[in-house]
Amino acid sequence: MVVNLEEKVMSVMEKGASRKVIQGILNASLRNAVIRRALIKAIEKATYKMSFKGPDRPDKVKEDRYYMGRALLSSINRAFDSGIISTNCLKALSDIFLGKVFIEGIYVRRNFEEKHGFRPPCFVTISPTNICNLRCKGCYAGEIYKPYTLKYEIFDRVISDIKKEFGAYFFVISGGEPFMYRENGKTLLDILEKHNDAYFMGYTNSTLINKEVAKKLSQLGNFTPAISVEGFKKETDERRGEGTFDKIMEAMDNLREYGVPFGISVTPTRYNAELLLSDEFIEFYFKEKGAMYGWYFQYMPIGRAPSVELMVTPQQRYKMLKRIWKLVIEERIFIADFWNSGTASDGCMAAARGGGYFYIMWDGTITPCVFIPFKDKNLGNLYRLYEEGKTITDAINSPLFKRIREWQNNYWINQPKEKCGNLLAPCIIRDNSEEFYRIVKDTEAIPIDEGAEQYLKFIEEGKMPEYNRKYRELVDPLWEKEYLGKK
Image (cartoon, rainbow, N blue to C red; front, side, top):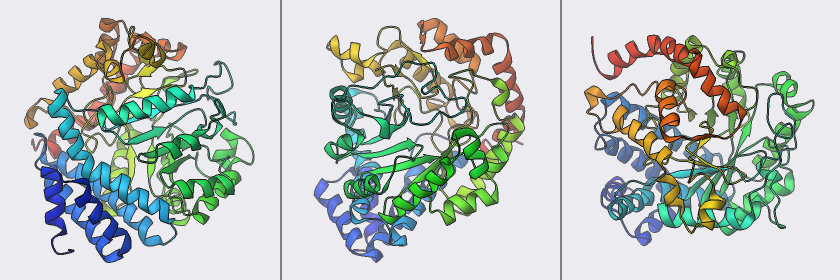
């Protein structure tokens, strides 16, 4: 079986296979470490081959995507090899994550495209509540916004609809604090238990993950916490409150005790970017504490009291680009940066692009991305959508979503590789602010808060266009030389 595994995985990826065949391979991998390692290696090799059979992109873009996938598979393999991951978590990683996302999901999405004429999003981010138990400096929670909680029946229904309509079985849960979700006697744990055929990742401050919660997550198996950290004790307690760092360390200990894989989430700003990619930081969280993955979300001038001055400088961002890819390629640590990993994600993932995602908020607001605080004027709310007898597919076919996808197509998706737009500057709102401004005005998209209105002023005042220009002075030569092969 091991000898022919790569051939079987390639066959599954290219032609599809029955659930029975896939499950047989995965079950064998759980029982036998040799088969498991061979399976992951086979997926890695098949992913490399498949990456060069994909869309017409520069070869180095395809290589970047392979390296990021390899880092993720290496992280999963390290979790398996550690021997501390619970049986249910191992099964969920193997059956749902590897099985549905890396293998079977390719086949399902291909069938969806043939039936509906477009590729569906690969996942959806949902914030079921904006309530939080902390009062972090600069955060909206508990300060000026009215507390909202998504009704459980709507939360449950939209997950079911997304699975059925898009064949997507991966969900990202954000907030507020996800573990503060309470509605009609139900919690986040009830959602995880009901939808045990899906895999969930949640951004959390982790202070509510006591032993009881960690044990339940271990039993469920289908949830991995992405724990927000600011740095070390000094930086974390300064922003999140005294004693928070110790609670985070305790939560990590609880998760390790019960065998629940976890990662970290950080927000680089002008003032902490170097710290968050320092050798000490990487060593502590990924090697000592056992984080399986890391998400880096550069500060965006949106939300409460947005500030262009808090953004990482173009020079800092360029250094972050180099540093992250060094860690991904040389140390096989899975670290993804929404703005510096554009070559791995095949560009901007917003607006329900094929293989991408979109965002549903605590009050039912539907936006193209967590970082795009604008909604379509007619199809921008989940409650209204359902009341009018429409579907979640109608939402992603709204004028706002369509226009962003049109920009994506013109920037790189439908372009030959020699004319592919710079995927080192992939973001419609962050890196191409003037294009985004035109889309908002043309579609009459609605800002969801005062921060969104202020962001538009940053464009009108020339602040964001100037940031875009300065960053492109650094990355355009890199893109042309290393990716397009121009001298």
